[in-house]
Length: 173
Image (cartoon, rainbow, N blue to C red; front, side):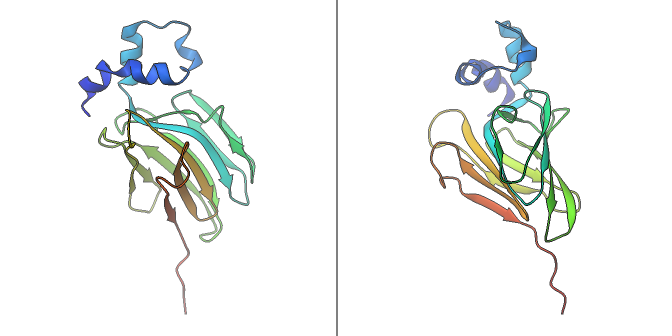
């Protein structure tokens, strides 16, 4: 979907979910078009921390950072659209990978404006996941962060997307 297409139908996105507080009440059409020009069509409903450690996140849609305790979930501060790769800030999650025994900093973005999510972590190839919705313009996802990676599911229908990625330490004989 081209950027001009996204500007024409930005109202679909802001009518479906609440707008970030910093846009104020009743922002102008120009403000909405400019704001949504940096965001794709994938919407994070919540993040579930399935790790044995706390994790941190940065949500550029709401310009909010926070922590999620082990075994807990967050939906208020984590809700928002995933930014395009050209955006100044990406959706970020920092978690401890127990298999690799290191903290991983993951950036999440939409590289091609087409419901493709890219998960980028230092020292690894970018992992791309297709999350195109069955119908409608947006794809709603839940991110499960695990001790070794992540899992993506649809918010409304569990396991529709069902995409996961796991990092493991190399086995040495």
